[in-house]
Length: 442
Picture 1 (tube, rainbow, N blue to C red):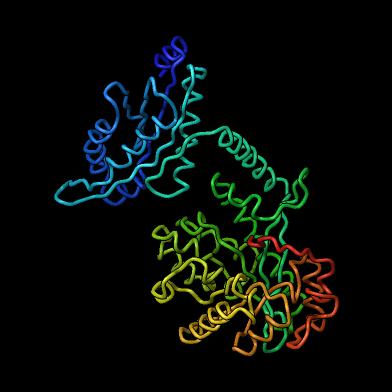
Picture 2: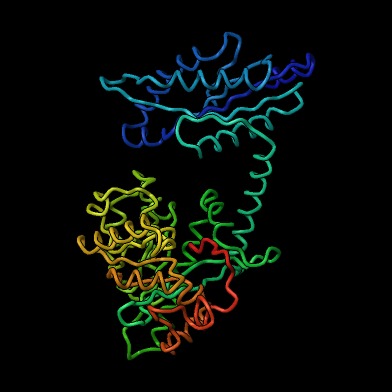
């Protein structure tokens, strides 16, 4: 590459570099063995050679990664043609050991003009574009732009700041009550993480959770949330020794769910905090479940064996089949707020919510409605047999202190099927709520 860049500097020509990574190759090694994986790489290499031009350089960069150097391209369109040929060359199945295997490749593409870069810079940028391509699914390619570099730098900075946030106690946990529509009592809370950033004030999960997932910091953040929620549950239980303890629920990230050590982590946190497994709900979004095959059933079964409840969040948005609900040890589903928002006037939302409630009863699942904000929402849900709900109608996400006040004074919870609570949405707890409801997921 250094020689190619030097030639481009002398001639002023354009150079294209393609960083290719086989999709889900780890699954091949893990399921069929590394020797089979090596044979597959060897068998695929001629296809890669055939897809590029005669004078292009093809190199195995490491593992299942290949780099292609294309000198004297006319521009981006020229390089894209090569990227598309590479993708097409992997379209047909490859036969090894008497069976067919389908392999796709994700490609990051960089155009260098006049060789004005170092080899390290070019590879870094092509690698960043390749990871961007993987976000689009299998078999995609992506052309590098300066925005990718800015996002990469921002992601690295965010990773550093998140490590600091956990270490220096900058994370906060707010709690939104889950209310029984039969009794009007608070029967549970959902823990929702926030980040008290020293410069950017209070950050919502949407502003940092995705970066935490990508960097791996989510494991630290997730454990902190679990510890804090369980610790707070134990404290609240002491406030009401004569009443049934509430449940506390926390959200599990995609990366947490796929970690085999998750059940051991949960068991350790329960021991450390004194929280009871039977009053801990672990929420998994339907999108995580549908992302799919990576969600280990044995991990979910091990969590169930601890005595915790598993809740499928955002139900209806991930297009999961009913077979998943039958096969996996799910205890409850949460109807996504996007469907509740149209109640009772939108006939499609009404039909979906009614169907989910009927399904829950048929399968023996608890159904919880999210995003309840009006008396109209509440009346429809109550009329159709929904037993539990949460949303700004009852209260916005509250601090631990405000939540303790609500638990000590249950009369402050407003459940009136005919009108909105005094003071607007959120009742006595909901003063000056923003018109826009940010994504609260913790």
